[in-house]
Length: 396
Image 1: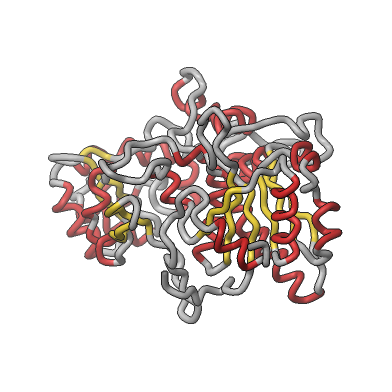
Image 2: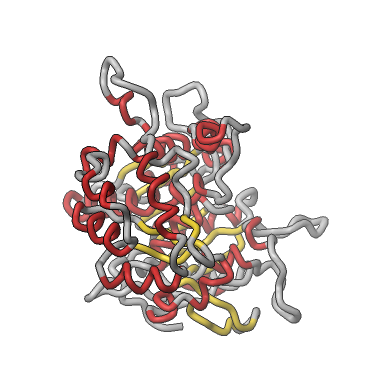
């Protein structure tokens, strides 16, 4: 273990999260130096799985410790795991003493079970008045869905995300092939927690911070897709039309595919020159200014692809890059580990876990010149730090 020097060094977080939503948010805070103590449930008397359920998806290497699946590895590094049975008096005692030492309590359990375990906001702030209590919920207070269970698929459906593909091709609604609701909401958890910490630094006051998935994902979606419905009365439909068209896709080249996105007026003039475009393209009012291009995006998409068929993807990347025109080859997931830029910045960091073996950790993407984010601990075994933390609390 290396000592963390991140911006949240010295901050202690009691983490009662499971799956991805809350755990991803607390993993960002752990990367930034916080001491995140992950509370996990014991195995059941009949031998049922204990701990975070994300310990179990995936295929482990031969000889690896059990319950250390790849998603768990990715979002639970830099944390300490302790097993606490919240149903027992001894478990409640551990939580009481732990909360007294904490700056932040974060959970994605529903509020009713939390209160049933004596872990509601008022219960814990009675123990630690300046505690920041972060509740990761499916739905915010005050609406008819308050308190309902929610997972990524449910929130993609209710937020409108699952309807987007149908607007493109008139097909059935479909989920984005990513747990985008969990991950977007996890980012909200991280920034909201840091904002509450900043407030406490200024005032000494803790607070309840609620992060509801439906509101977070809907807010994220509507940055561009509220569009003309932003006005009252509306001036047009929902959705930023340039995004929702079958023509917005990687372009075919002579040998493969490419993403190319001329943006400025100069970018477009340079692109047309490189592509030996007809003279009419340089004079066509649809292409001459950003304002006009914004109204004619379908025509632009249709015009660009035929121009790209004359060269290979690599040839286009070379000449477009030389002119400063935004472009990229289309990476398959299999290409990511060998992507030249990601390799140069050490994005995939090969580590050796003492109980799992070699694995790749994803580098924290944000760079701090004075307080760098680091990987100081490999992801923990279930209950690996129970004795260590109990000793710190004087319970051993």
